[in-house]
Image 1 (cartoon, rainbow, N blue to C red):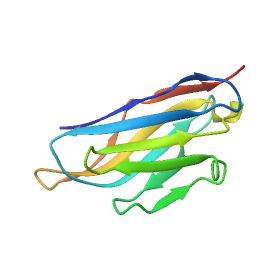
Image 2 (image 1 turned 90 degrees about the vertical axis):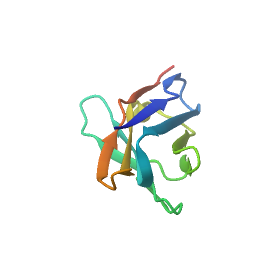
Image 3 (image 1 turned 180 degrees about the vertical axis):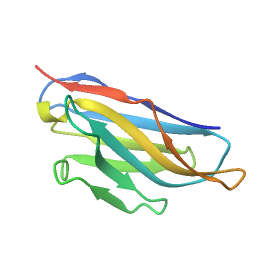
Image 4 (image 1 turned 120 degrees about the horizontal axis):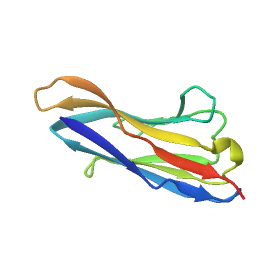
Length: 120
């Protein structure tokens, strides 16, 4: 059993910043890619940013230069630093990880999501 738990969401004013965290726990052997997705009101879920186990990153065009994804492989944690937030960033943010468990089975695991609301 592997779980992802996100935290750090909340209400922020336009132009503000938030830092999301996602911790993986359970029967983990290794974690490959870790990603952040989001789903805004009335929108489909979209990839925001991803990071490989070696630290290579990729970003959606809409967040390049404003968001930064990092990870701590010792703590099995991925972060998303979000700056210059605008109303268009309002969404539920989900963490996803490609995990190999102790049985060496590869799993795709999702967190429960954390709500980010950008509003004055």
